[in-house]
Length: 250
Image (cartoon, rainbow, N blue to C red; front, side):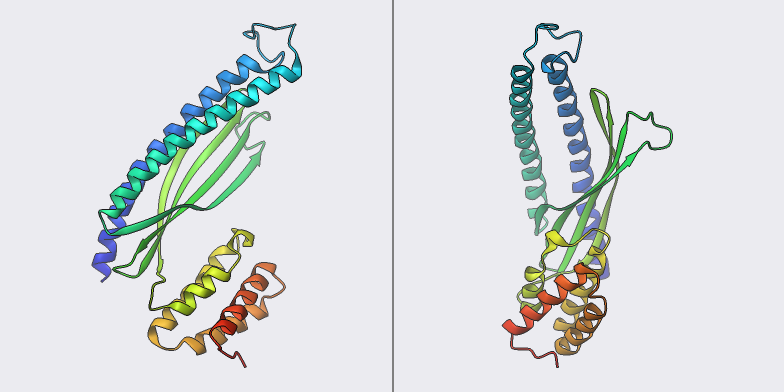
């Protein structure tokens, strides 16, 4: 089993490494195009503006907004094409994928070594790959940097990281209900790994036939940490799942 998981992880890594490089190239391509549009349309913003000194601010900003929207639409289409390629490659391996299930960004103002006018971001974008054969979830995170300069934005790939988690399937109906009821959009990145570990604990217990004991243990931990609202949301989700499956916590 471990050997099979390792082989799958290596194949998933190869697929997403190629995707990550193309993704960063795509971001840089459209960042450059957007900068060109800003130089062209931004009122009094650049010497190349053909109406410099005669700009109507509202008109210039409206034209800029339309141009940026058109570029965003084109970028989304190209990104969709890349995602389709990834989905097809993973399908050949017997895997399903959900793109961009989570995104986390840290903004560093006045980062050491950068001019004060620059903004520096570290961005993580996570994708979920389901392996129904091995009953595993591969959480693929693409980590990259974003540097915002005056009139220019640059992107640089850092690395691709894969975490292996227990998968939810037809053998784990309670876990599926619990996971579905958790308001993941309200769970902060710093607490997300803790919540995911609780879900994994219940998935594993449900497969091993000790679900009720695991539910009570997880409930105890969540209740004890209820002062953290991420835990409180998860505890409420657990209560709702227990009610649905007629499981008493007391």
